[in-house]
Length: 471
Image (tube, rainbow, N blue to C red; front, side, top):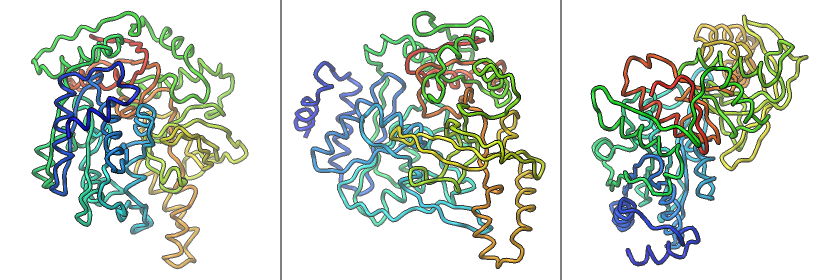
């Protein structure tokens, strides 16, 4: 089987000038052991940091499966991550939620995701990229954790399908976890009884060091993994990694790269919502030369900050927390102040995982745009629900629940500006140019500070600019 694998991949054009590293060769052997297994719940976990060749191996494995008569389905936790893996692998990729779940209405018109029936027969493999982001915690829309639901979908009905988790264990774990459960072989075996094969890529490819971004990513990774009590981290500057003396230089750099409506050209990253708000306001004033006080205009970049299940389309079953978009048109005549908040109807564009821009028109809450709060408070949300409930008192409970499930105020999109976002929100995405605004006292934990630095550093495809870097 090893000979067959190499016969297939050596015919691929991208392999003509590439020699696999020793780590990658060991990963291939573990992959073939996984391919030949017949336990029915076979899972391959492949981990590695930036520059170790995970994306290359995904492409090789996908091609091998296809040649052997298997169907390959690429998935990722977020739309941004799906878009990145689709671009890199040149294969269609989808979000886990889009592929695995359908949305159903729960009690009090609260939406819940339910796992679809898996209609795929045998000889299908699911490859999940950016698996470090997959948590096992329940949230408002899942009756059980994302990982548990995903495994149920893949292996339901005892059909012998296969599953591959790929990810970077140094990146920040899912919120609510102190590790990434989908990348932990022992956890998967113990909690879910999976037959797990594992390979870790540590060796960085030589061509990766043509990039100072990746060279520094390795330095940051090693400083974190060494586990020293007082780690020393000295980043290397020049070429595609530069420092900036002050905020004015950072704003000038951002405005120099900014292209209206381009979601991938440049991104400002920071740690806290409060700092993100300050930077967003400064950027808008700089790039738009704002003489008016309009809080939202055509061309603004925005980010969804709360899952929304009402305004989705066939391309977006729901608009996820962290989804990035661009304002196409605002309708000032719809502006109003109600229930202690400001509202307006807006036409926005969002890119799906295939890079196609889709337009969505809906009502948005404007108040969060210039607030340090991440979302509306429970008290604010309850007041809206209570006020709107009075419009449906004469209906039956069933009819009222149905109408409230699509009420434009209850289900208004909660958004913030998308010029600067937090490092946690950026996971899974890639931007050509990344500006990092470091903040002091990252929870007082130097090791987590270094891990956060690694996560934001590896969001950049070409260049990194750093403001206030302590390393």
